[in-house]
Length: 549
Image (cartoon, rainbow, N blue to C red; front, side):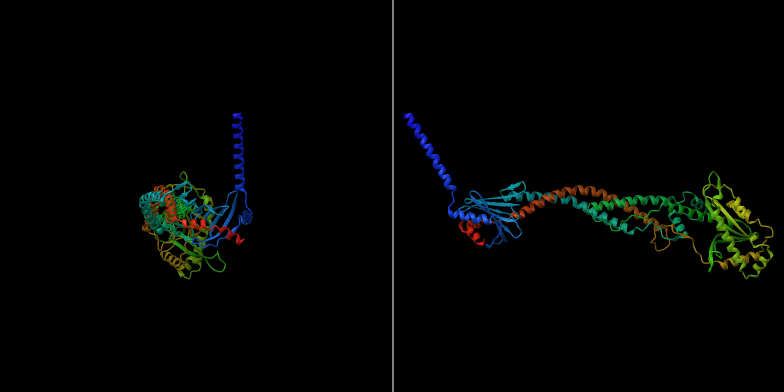
């Protein structure tokens, strides 16, 4: 029986305990009529953006209320930039359960929490969290020293880079255009080519070199050098752009001679050398003669209303007649050259030579020339067209297939044949000294102003030169070009070391800036206990919010 009583007593007590606890629970969550009204009001304004009109020094302008069931109300207060400065949690009796104060960017740097009269301050950014400001200061000083040390490493490299860049800019500013494709005369081009090649067309050794197939070796070498130069310049300027560095202002690629330019230049130089060889050979021939080099005479059959002109390489007046020489530098093969290949072009040229001479003589008022023409059965017998072929490869060679020239009474000879040609006169031709002198005088009087040949594809070295190109100008330009390449290589080498150090320094500097910003955000943090006390004591704060709604 005792056991039964004890068991019953325990059961009753247990039932009473759970019933009382249940009543307590139910009583705790029961809301009074007033509470229900307040909750209803709060539900109406929950989640809305409400004005914040309490005096403050942080530009707090609006707030948002949220109902957190069952137990408390959450209130967030923002500044005019939308950053949350305060998070306040209220119990249903309007007392403050917890107040959280954030940093200027929604707690990105620091956060202070107050609850039940206690306050906890934490400084955090990302994964980092600190309870003491000294820890932040320590990190700031550490990264500050690392940045200073790195700066001491890259500063000398920066100074060297700036020095080489300034020198590169200086050399680049002196660089002139290597060539131009504008219209220039043959004589300008030949002169510049001789300067660059260091040749003189007044001695046999240089003449042979100028005639050779590879007569512009130095120009080709310089041209190839400028190709390398352009590659380096383009690659360097591109790299400077990719690195977000300033490009060198005056550094630009040079114009390059094409293969066509080089061939034309080689032919011009060879042609000038061939004419000089013929001129020298003519002066060696010991016979009574008058020589006129590069003669420009009027040509009557090209224009309707005015005279044209015709240029003759050499005009020789001897007892055996008047010889019009056209000089051609050609490449022989196996000791032979087929002159038929040039016939169409050459036949037209020499026909103009003969017509120009005839026009001048027939218009002459000189009695000696008038009498000369009367005694000759035909003026064509007086004038002889000659083509002198000069080999660019062999000293002696054979001219083949000249039948068409012979039919047109055009003599085709080599350099060695000139002397025998000049003393060989046609039947009935035997010019007297006074006739030779009269013809020479008439040629001089009829000579037109020199109209030098020019073609669109001609080249002129260093187009902005103020006067005739000199060897000194060429050497100065090559010096500056070499210095540009040298400085580009030096800068590229320095950039490798500099970028490696600079990237490492930048990483440390970013960390330093992070800690510096972190420190600046939190080091002036002021305790806001008074704010907490005000909110804890003014329990009618929610009533003021209701009044706005």
